[in-house]
Image 1 (cartoon, helix red, strand yellow):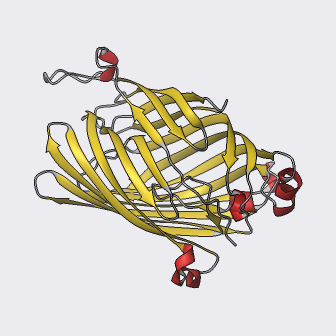
Image 2 (cartoon, rainbow, N blue to C red):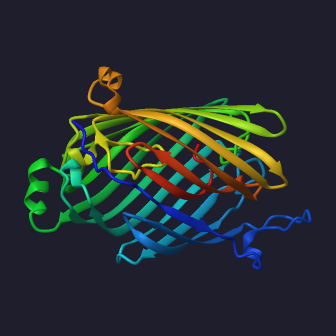
Image 3 (cartoon, rainbow, N blue to C red):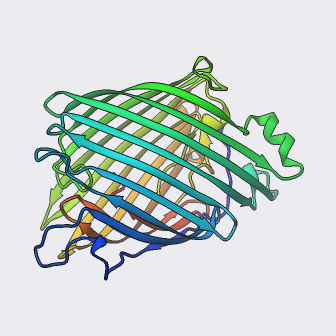
Length: 353
């Protein structure tokens, strides 16, 4: 079973560093980088409208042998009276023997659909969300990590008029969820945020259980493999294979199409897999060009991927700027095109994988 929302998914975004502020890092003089990052943001898309916000981070090195950590906050507000905010951390210490990730987020998103769930009818929905996430990993051998994780979310979907009872009937109403899971990871990349060589593999699960205080009991499994292939003069080809699979999940817990150019959550199915190729060309100094293409499948069984209606393609490109070389913080501004009139202008802080 797959739920669709057709029409263009046009998103425009931009972000600029406060060039006159020392918070933006060292200039091209060889001086030591500032551990602070402050980036105002502005964007426009059909789910949140036109919005402005910020991304602020602190990037320390917790000990001499460890990767630089990051603690960051973000927030934005749109002309549709939608808002999101959050705090997250990615910490490395004891010469990368230990890794900790955590996050907290919340927001209210008001949506307008011209073709809600493929019915051809318009609808307005309001999504309230909040959540907490934590993960700890320990290096058990060279490049290998094992760990555990937990998540707690509260997600409520409301709709106008006729759609309110219909959402209840099909199960697309959100839910409180609490889950625990395990993590296995292999990482030989030369830089965790802006790798030029090496490979990364991670698989992890979440066991959502009513016994943990949630509304539903179901399971999810995710896996991702990335290979970095350097070529030419400082160019990199990154190849990603990614999948998410569910068991006994409610509709609100289904897997979503995540290729660039599509609005996350507009296309859902029990399982999802994709292959994405990302080419990163070095131009001069900190500037670069990007080009990417991918294909994904939403399915209930693998044989569904032989049906063109279950396959989705994406392609695009843009420019990149290496804002903080030591920490590997990259800004990317790109245009992506999908199928069925889906397209997006994207701004992102960090490489996609």
